[in-house]
Every structure is written in structure tokens, then in C-alpha cells.
Image (tube, rainbow, N blue to C red):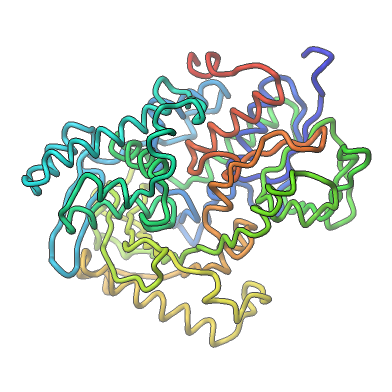
Amino acid sequence: MSDKHPQTACIIGGGMSGLITGALLAKNGYKVTVLEKNHIIGGGLQSFRRGDAVFNTGMQVLCGYDYAFKHFINYLELNKSNLDFSPVDFNAQEIIYLDEEHVYHLPKTRDRYETYLISHFPNQAEGIHQLLDAIYEIGSFYDGFWPHTMNYHPAAVKYAMMSAKQLIEKHTSDNELRRLFEYAGMHVGHNLTFISALDFGMILNLYIDGGWRIAGGNITLASELAESIKHKGGLIYNDCEVTKVHVTNKKISCIETVDGRQFVADIYVCAIPPKVFLSMTDGDVFRLSTKERIVNDPNDISANICHIKLKHNQIKYSNSCIFIATEVKDDALPIYTSILTPPSHNHGEWAETLEILEFTRSRYFEEWAKTKTGNRGEKYELKKKEIGRQMVDRASVYYPNLEDATEKIYIATPLTIRDFYANPNGAVYGQHGLNIPIKTKLENLYMTGQAVRFNGLYGMAVTAQMTAETILGKSLIDEIANA
């Protein structure tokens, strides 16, 4: 390491973005310290165990594994024997309409995806082709492994001011076909009116090309990233909540935790929601316009998640993403409920667990906002039971025997997600889409995570790479791509 580079880095937040950024810096010679508020590291990679069942709290499907993320794993020298990645099936996504009783099995790869849609909507053939052309033009943003700078990418000029809904309606006229594409909103927590055409194009491109899943719980990936940091001499602190960031002469002098400990490093990386970070310091971190965007972003889209332990040999394992169209009163939320049977190691014909997810607003749980887990009262517990009953009822359209097949149900609400992710309001995706700068006005502070560039595990890996490159002052593209 040259003299111009600092030798120590302190990462605030041990979620996906913090762990990947920390592992990249550790790989390149930094002594990294990661401070995680929760008892378990991982953020959206956290898993929890109930008896012999493992449930994921966040990410269920990883896109971009086979042509991108596996290179990160090789570059960081993670122990692949502990990581059981498996691709979703050929018919990767099943879409079900309750009202019209239509079921669609959307296949992987563009040619098959396009042929399938045209077979169901022959009078929309030209529009389908043009729409997929646009989606893959946007998708060329990450061709060749590394995303191009969007400001200089041709797709940015053509689609930057267009919503996903506008893009779809430009090329299609069939309402059922338009509604079909709404499933893409499940991957960012909004319906297509509130998703940019650029985000929609990249998401759909990734999912058409095919997703992967981690058997045995996503926490295995978080653990391997942590081991990579520790193997290079780094430290991981759990139950270590940062409460104060001390700034002197436009530099962070130290950070302080809830128990009074102080941590000093040459550089600091913020891997928590920027709004939370700003509440910890009175330092001048961003330009005023950027700070206002961060502070004024409501960021209250969360989810209800129904984790189900199944009885033996009752529900068949499905290696695909299932989406059931439902009526949603909130016009910003996706219109689908998602159902998954997560993979376990050496699973057979039958699923061990089942997970149902629906997006909601944290404001619907304001009554209990100041309470803690286990002390929210009978009314809250009754509300959770009712949420679980409704979600099981909706999922029973696909699995008619689900109620009888259920051994135990665990319900997560926005309050649960708030506690697990340490995100304000229990927001599922954090403050994504803010496009805040990696380098801040503080000389030794850098940013990473969804608020910087991209969401999802693949997106966070790319964002972490960008943060690490800014700190290192060199490109990592070739090294990672060739690993």
C-alpha cells in the first residue's frame, strides 16, 4: 500500500453494502473495522432459525450472479463450499390473476420470454418486441460486467425522464399485458407509476436473464464476507450502535457508540441510511440541496412478511417466484403478493418453509412505533394474526391446502423490519434512488449503499466496488472481472 492511502477504515453498518465494501478494502490492504448495531450482521442478508427451519428476513432472489457476483466471490476468496447458490427454474416467474384466472409462466432468456408473451398476446407482437428492445438497451448499462456511467450512457438520454408505466404504455395497448409487467415493481417496492424507466429496464433485464438463490439461508453469505474481512486482519463488532460522529476541521476525528466506546480510523465509510447518519453529527457532510433530499425523503414503504414452517410432505417445493395479483388501495405500492418456497440444503420434492410478502406503509403501524419487540401488547398481536390469516388466504389460491399444511406462522411487520434492518420506519430498501455522492464534504468520509447508486445484492456489490475504487484511487474492474 502506498503512503498516500490510509491504513485503517471504519465501516458504520454491517449490512450488505458495508460488508462488501469492507471486504474489498480489506482485500486491498486496509485494516477494516465494521460496526454493526444489531446482534446479527448482514442487514438484508440476515436469517433467523426457529427449530430446524431457517427463514430469510430480506433478499430472496439474486440476479446477476452468474455473470457478475460470482466474480466478487472469487476475487474476495470466499469459501465457496459454504455458499450453496442455485439458479431458479426455466419458468422463473409465475404470474397469477385472481379476477381473470390467468396464469403465466415467464421463462428465462430474452428470446423465450418474447416468444412466450407473443403467444399470449399476438396482436401486441410488435410492441412487445420494441419494449424488450428498450429494456435491453437500458440493460446494456451493465454489459461487460461493469455498469457504465449513466450520465454518458445513451439510454440515460432516451429514458431518464420517463416512468416505467409510460415506457410500457408507449409500446403496448393491451391492459392485461400492461398489468402483467407490474410484477417488476415487487423488486423495488413500488408500482410502475413510481419507478423510472431506467430502473424498470435494469430490473426486468436481470430477471429475464435469470435469478439465483442461496440454500440454507442468506446469512451464509454475510458470514463469509465477515470472515473475509477478519482473515485480512479486520474486526467485526456486533451489538455496536454508533450514536455520535465527532467532526473537527472538516474531518471525522472519531465515532462514539452507545456504550461509550470510541473508534478512530484514517477513513470512515457510511453504510447505513444517510438520514440516520446525519442525525449522529452536526458536521457539514453534504451540499444543502443533497441534505434536503435526504431529510425530506419519506422512505416509509415497508412490508408484511409471513414466514411459515410447513408440515412434512404437504407443499411441493417450487424453484420459481410466484406473484399473485391483488387489489392494493395505496396507489404507490405493487399490486402483487409474492410467494416463495426457499431452498434448503439437499432439499427434495417437498418444501420445508414458505414465505409470503406484501408491501405496506410503516405509517399503518404508528400506534406501536415507540414500542419494542415482545412488548407491543395484545392489540398488536391480534393485528399480526389477522395479517397472517389474510396472507395465507391469498396464497391459498396457489396452494389450496396451505392452511392445513401450516405447522407454525411467524409474522414480520414494518416494526420487525425496522428492528432487524435498523432502517427508519422499517423501510425495506432504504433510501434508494437518491444518487448521493460517494465522496462527502468531510475529508475522510465516504458513502456506500442503496442511496448512492443501486439496490439489490448485485447493485450493492457494484456500488461497494465504486466506493472502494474512490477510496483506493484505482479501478478494480479488471481484477474482479478476471477473478
